[in-house]
Image (cartoon, rainbow, N blue to C red; front, side, top):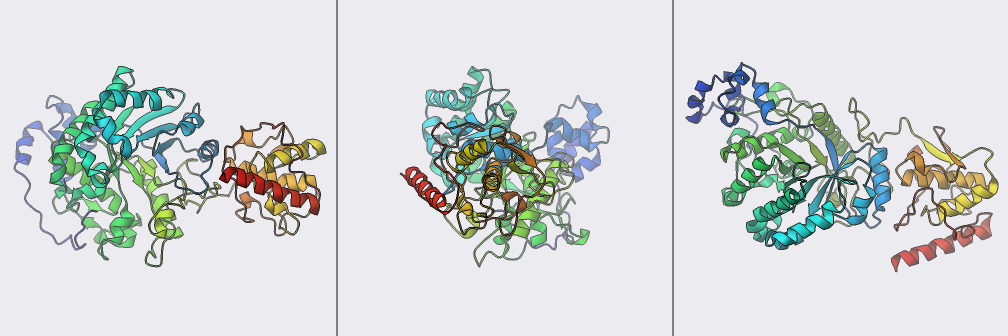
Length: 546
């Protein structure tokens, strides 16, 4: 983890600059570029481009880093009831999430993402790294099976080779560069190297003395790996992937880092951290870590590799010794992070150059080992219900998980009762909706009519599938409405309430499909048939567990 000194940095004297600064004046570089720590990057640009240095430092930056900023999400799978890939994709579409990172190259997920336009970063897991890094043919086979087989229907844009390998699997570090090169060579052979970039996510903890950022450097013991890695990233037009967790920086700082500084909360100028070498002001941990990465790369003579943050977030719940893992703090951090990226604020070192970021993560992962906070980084629970409502403005429809314009799926007025019954049977059977709230004595049993019960089942399925318009049809007997159908103690999912419903985790049927064997299995009509429902649900559960 990065080391932050006490915050009394305004009184620090300006440290002497390296002698290399004086040599660059022949380029006609404006002094502002030195004060902002851009001088090392300028050396990487041809001196013949003298017009670039007409007093505008932003032109220097933009020549190096040109790519569209985006917010994506990581999709972990350590859930006891992991949604089916079609449900995951439905949620992504409903939330207008256009970038995702997978921790593997799961075939079912890649098939579900096909023809959606969602940009996908696939991962080669750490356990496969040694084999890939020792065999060009093994790497080629992996790319063939996990990338080429799905591209271009599935819009794979990035391959993450391992994850935090230097920290978690150091014995594989010697083959990491070979793995990157072999994977890239396989893409070149298929003429996909310009469409799909290759890199490896690193932990920010490999950056030492990260404050002030201008003095940051990578752990020297990893230089034999990092130097050729940065050359590879630069030559292939790829990114330095970095996992940044201000939550852990804050927790491990023993009070040195203020909570507001970790959460992007506005700070008065006299409370901001100041880099004594560059006089740059830092109002949050995230920006300081990103700039520390840029300076650490420059220390190794790599000056035009952009940073891509592959993981960042904040937990919404923790153990008793983790009081700052809270709903409010998680909401504050992620809302501010999204706003920072999409507004293209950039960092103090590179203002206006946004740092694209994948939020960690889409779902709470309840089976993850470790403290309670490890299980509560998600934006949504397994049912696709927001853990909290992000406080977003001017961010478009990305992650618009608020309920201010909520929609529901209910039975069409005047729909044929037999068709309604068949659709209800399907929703509570193959559709995998937990209809236990419709049992006698439960909150949604009354009124005991097919239409009323269909409203609940249809709406539950609609929300389970991410509120895609195509998931509210049921052969023409259902329609989307903005009227909340909740009544008495029966709370529908879209209303923000829950009746203890869960969804059976199994292969979900195709949307709006029919099942020849479903009709009659879950027939509703009173206490007796409600008991049949329980039996059928138990049967489905036992089959799934088996």
